Length: 495
Image 1 (tube, rainbow, N blue to C red):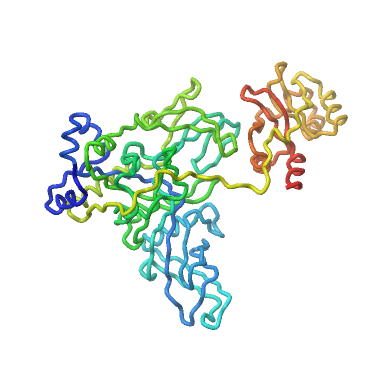
Image 2: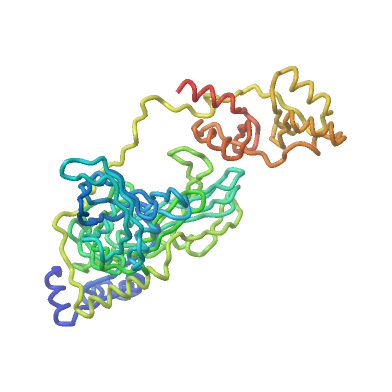
């Protein structure tokens, strides 16, 4: 048994033994008891997108003074409902001018890198704060306080993502190719901080950490902290003025928004053999669920459970097909964080702190309660679908469209599997171009949906692809219904 104070005393004497999380498994495997005695600290690290990040800034009072009601930094709006000249800039807030290309995460990076940031503020004016507008340029040196405060960082583990739909999806898990052609995953596996202390024995309120190149602290559990399912996380803070642009990078996620890459490392004290065993975790021991983001609902279907070892190999088997797996976190920078943190300790610049309060182990993540239920596709779709076959004459298909008062007809094979879709406009063009066969004019790459999706997801899909309908198919590709823009509009009107 060791105590944190005993380990700190060894740091002061220059005798502390510090190893990285990727080195500890081999050390422990060779001799578990000796590892617990000889090793004092295991450094961990992670560098990835942490959307729940941001910074509190105090700009100082102007002359005449202003009580900022709204404030923008490089055209990115910050929350000003704190005090007269305080604001919080969130990493995912988008620029009003540049949209997805620039956001709060980029503002934070610009400040840390020493660049000037354009500040614009508005106010309603009061007797003690008469000014209504202010414009200036600021740098990090100009503000009084700049505190990086991230409400949710460093998940203990994370789900991986694939996409079974027929279209490319742009998500917070990156770009997901259609028909399960890739898998994206987050986290750093065996070197992740909370993976090395899954029982939160040494990580809690007040734990000193490496935060973006400076010393920071854990301020408690993060939002959506869910320890019962292994999805614990932490909230953290640190002095932005002491941080390095190397470990804070603004990011654009195509088609989704902006974020901030954050470098974070936690030293794990080896208090006993149990802690030594915990920090000897390997990628093959950490399981990750691959979820189907092609199904647009909160409880996405499980495709497969794999390990970080499989994911880091760059290839995953999905239903007999080998697909590429890509990390959203940087292992190279994460390893650098572990090394730098170890160097701080060895140079007697960093000492451990015992948590004043442990992270909770019994919290449960709740979902938002809607005022009224949102229907699924199967509640709205037309189940008796008028269909055609690719061998049908164009005149027959035209008669079906006219007699049933519809704009499009799905084309199926003899078993009922979807092959394409034809619209009234396609038939009009066929007449003008003298085309005779249905298979020559029908759209073969059809945007489809599933019955278990929310209708809101279908509404988004119709608008995104500028189409008027989406056939509903099952897992075998059999046509089981159709949803049109008219069906969606009726639902929206009722809502």
